Length: 94
Image 1: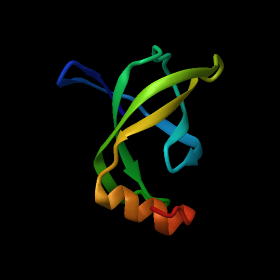
Image 2: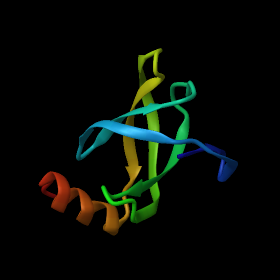
Image 3: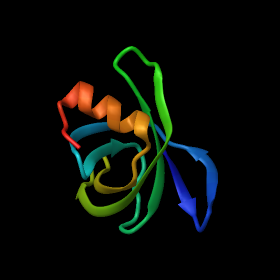
Image 4: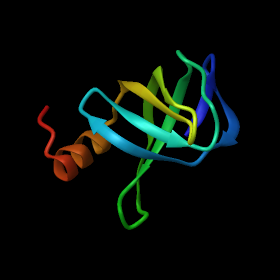
């Protein structure tokens, strides 16, 4: 993911893993602390490492844990390819 500053993405991409997921959001574990209400742009990969999308947007809503840094996000823009992947992989219904 990258953190967003206004309309521009910051240059630094950070690795992270989704620990929990729901149709409206996810819990993400990463290597850095991310402030509440930070907007992020997420790249999603499948289990084999294939890129699903680079255009999933979310807002950090809650800090979950310090070690490793973990936070909750609410999805703010979910592209069709992410919806299709979530529907297939996690049996989410639209």
